[in-house]
Length: 420
Ligand code: AMP
Ligand code: GLY
Image 1 (cartoon, rainbow, N blue to C red):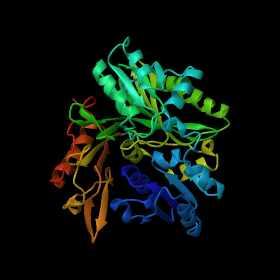
Image 2: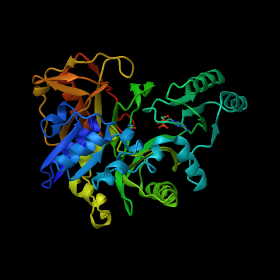
Image 3: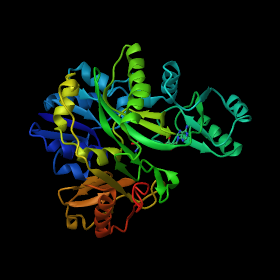
Image 4: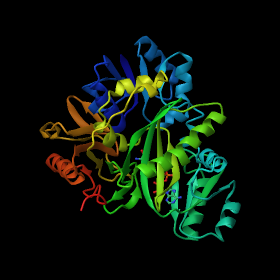
């Protein structure tokens, strides 16, 4: 089977690497991929906004199945477009992708189906939003409605911070804003919960905890994710049942009422408050770096899983996992998530020896003349699986130490809540 993977991050290299283990795979194409995927796939540079060029390439090269990594093409309707040409695609359609594309869409769905989430208000202009805040409690949470690469969320400690957030959003910092969301601040512990769906049935796809803040101790700015561990320390059978019954199932029912269904990975960002799950946000894809952290534990053939989803046969397969503790640390370019240098060479990579349970997934890297250069904010993902989080983290940190890349930095404390 020939598979195409859309995306260029750590998530996509991981999918590529894990797919490669399948005997079903004949060839992988990455659109556009990174330095890590060059050895195992053909990297193809096509503008991802140009669905037609992409479709032509897929048809010409007889690609059997296309997997969409990032949210933007999903929200833009790539699945609907490719399916019109009878191409098998793994990922949700444009309507279902509104779960990530519009926070207000999701909040309204929560309201209609009684899905536990933070109390909220929707505001169409600065005056109304500011007026509402005069009688609010702080901290409060203010969010832009549209896709903002994780940056459109403000946790405001006082009225001044809140006013700045409102002004920035309505001035268009995250794209044209017709409205914004003001939300109650939930105090609890976060958890990333994943399922996979073929539109007819669902299966759990593990849990993780990521570290979004840039500095140790979960301080500083939000990033795409500085590291993660899986499973989450919070997950129990009982909590899992609550998440499925109170959050996931009503959401899928909500989509059915809109005459659509959900196919692909669904990632629920949850706040667990006194053992009760609250939905913070949905993502219509795997998390990054959660994907890097979770997939190395997968025992079942990933190609079979994707195929089963596209053929609505997910209920016919079992998804098995290694009972291991996985931990991922992300090596970033110095300066990230603000300004950082590009095209900095990463030497020494060939000296990193990986054991059977260690993984190195590329993110923002490119290969030129057999040399590897950093091209993005998040550059490399080091992952290790073992029987305990402490061993996994030690394995990862030893490799990072050995690489000793002067252009980068990373957090030494990933997983501190599960490691003494
Ligand atoms: P989001 O992009 O919606 O996931 O928000 C980014 C981060 O902001 C989340 O991972 C949480 O840490 C935090 N956050 C968002 N909404 C809330 C809320 N209602 N209460 C507390 N923290 C929140
Ligand atoms: N790690 C968070 C995300 O993928 O959105």
